[in-house]
Image (cartoon, rainbow, N blue to C red; front, side):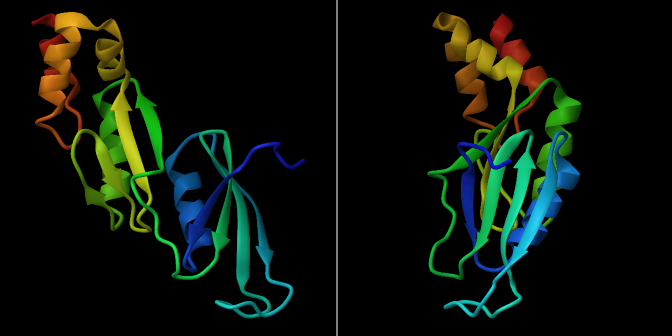
Length: 158
């Protein structure tokens, strides 16, 4: 059954490879179907992979091989809540070490240019707490690329 709301992600031609990477990397993720083009289209031929139905942590997605006209940007990202440093490291390293790129404040990009926020819950909890705790955690985060849980926890305590 098709979900009522699905995130559509535009890829040049690698939607299937991206979906398979996400399914192998994140729990509750899978490639559900691969659909081939029934005819030629501007950036592909009949029989090429046109769309891929997949989930990322339970979120329904559609990968569309639409060609090089549109690129991913930080205007859209997946934010992945992690419970500890091990989980943070696992996801961060999977994305960055598979052709991705590090950025600041817990953000990174995968090799297809899609942005990810790998965000430990301790950071979001600190920011939600407000006041001095939030200010200290925020200041610590601003100096990081991958989030260091121990440093955020120390900042929370003051």
